[in-house]
Image (cartoon, rainbow, N blue to C red; front, side, top):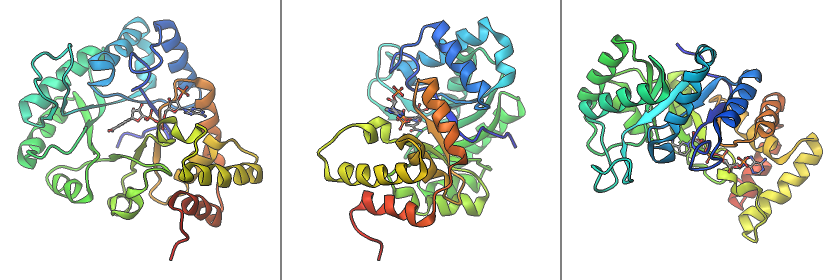
Amino acid sequence: MTEFSPLIIGAMRLGNWGAGFSQKALQQFVEGCIELGLNTFDHADIYGDYTTEGDFGQLLKETPSLRTKMKLITKCGIRMVCNNRPENLIKSYDTSKDYIIGSVEKSLVQLGTDHIDLLLLHRPDFLLDPHEVAGCFDSLQRSGKVLAFGVSNFSPAKYELLNSFFPLVTNQVEISLLKRNAFTDGTLDQCIRHKIRPMAWSPVGGGALFKDSEDPVMKRIHKAGKELCEKYNCELDQLLYAWLLLHPAQIIPVLGTSNVERVRSAHEALSLRLAREDWYLLWTAATGQEVE
Ligand SMILES: NC(=O)c1ccc[n+]([C@@H]2O[C@H](COP(=O)([O-])OP(=O)(O)OC[C@H]3O[C@@H](n4cnc5c(N)ncnc54)[C@H](OP(=O)(O)O)[C@@H]3O)[C@@H](O)[C@H]2O)c1
């Protein structure tokens, strides 16, 4: 099975949905991450209104040696309404065989690669037919165009259903102090049972956890965070990553920063181990009540 780095670099904000990196800045960022041993990049066809894969692919065309040093994840299945997809009349999901294969072919061209290391179905399509998807995954795997498959934002029941037709390697879901469903709805338990590692998107709440706020939840988290940052001599971002990393499901945070120094800071958090009581201190701050 393909091994992914212990922190994954999210590409959603690297292009025109965020940093708007020039090719030079993108190269510096990507090389900086790889130097830290963080070699896995998380894309989706839709990022940047269907342009960010192409920006990244341009870099790989100019510096082909980079491709061998990295793992590429991308996603498909959301049909977004935007100028680059005039055929999409309303936002919808599509996991039909033809759509998935067409999307993979486009991603291969955009990313300038002959294979995708991991393809995720971006959202649980209500019309998903597991027979059809499994057949499609099988043919993509046999052709060597996609090495492994997973899903994103799937409930445990939907994961179980598709996984019974085709072996999945991850469920990428939102997990942070602000979004804790995965701890209670069976998602993380299921990952442990299937010996797969979940990926956590928006691990620092999309940046919200760093902003001054009068919101009582934020105030409690900041108070507890300050206390623990002093105890562990660390920064708040490191504490937030360490909180995810302590869970036995071996969560892999998908970082959204486009700042290589913040990637370095996150990397340092890999060696920060919180005491169990401190994990619960943050949980309690986030929920506003002590556990029963
Ligand atoms: N599967 C899905 O449905 C799904 C959905 C959303 C996202 N994703 C994936 O998950 C990745 C991460 O999502 P995300 O961007 O929402 O994650 P995030 O890491 O929670 O948020 C990133 C934001 O937080 C800011 N930030 C990070 N560290 C900071 C710090 N120390 N101080 C102040 N601000 C800080 C970043 O700004 P700077 O850039 O300035 O550091 C950026 O704006 C995406 O790139 C994408 O690959 C997947």
